[in-house]
Length: 430
Image (cartoon, rainbow, N blue to C red; front, side, top):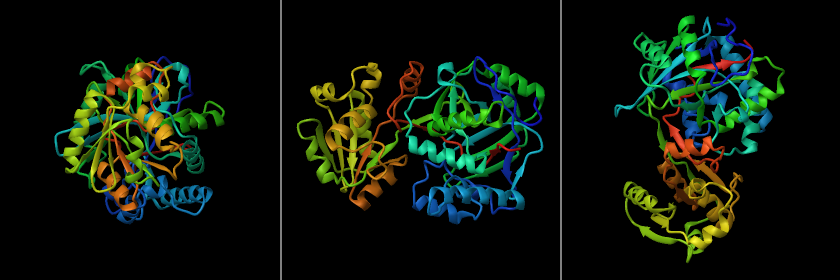
């Protein structure tokens, strides 16, 4: 095992997960570990969620992953200065030896997820080792890349999944044996999730895990923009270097299935009163004066039969389904697999956004992508906009398309639970 926590990047058949010296909060220097954590940067609902996290603790990780200043360069400089200050003050400390970290999340309903946090070799798409399933927005990749350059750190892990070989696989054996020991840290965040972290430092255990994982490929469940950022930054630095690797959480979904949820759209400047008439004769539209839970149940039932969406923002829900087949034939590209052409996200982007409502999918002034259903509806009602609520895609559909090399429309899925940011970071200049 490399004592510097980094090994030269070499061609491998599969996943190469490498130990690293984690940066972690000193619990004696912060109010509580829960108070310094945050959801991933793209899940924080701004500005309310951002302000809430900033006020939770002066050292909340959101000050690094979402720094606030007048310009992008000032934001990144602020994050870098904050990171250096926290390191010099001992707020963040470096673990003494490189490790792979076992990370566990558990909610109050009995859901248990365990995975491995490590530095994963950044590979090219043609290797077929790490499979993306969504397109990315270039301006977000550049924003994340600039932040990583300034801080020289991976501030939060992205989430990858793979299909392991059952309970007797070496990785599973090591992971679950480690989870029987006392953890490095344990905390419960305000969303009710408990979080625990352990370190795997024994060379034999690390080798067993690495030899098992090299037989597998992974699907990007959450973090497409950060993976694209890793690839960009690796290309900027001569190899071998620490930039050949990126921080990930790797979960075996054969052992610990993830939940797959939808990511909703908030359409700025489009009131529901204007969105609905544009659908006349093209979709069936039904008004549902019912609570949100019942409206989502109706959406799920309609989605079983075909493309379906819920529109909200005027105090009611409107179920939109049964698109005109001729409309789909005119607007949905025909050069993709049927599984892609029939996705709700495909129809939303190709037909509703581009053809009917004329909203660019990559214009942040016209469209926002929000994970929380209630928050999407509330913001639409508050601002007079239109919320488009989606039904989630099954994981097997996502994985099958990814294996075919077919990417889904951006922000098509939300896998979870997502790792909490702030439990372990990776500095690239150690």
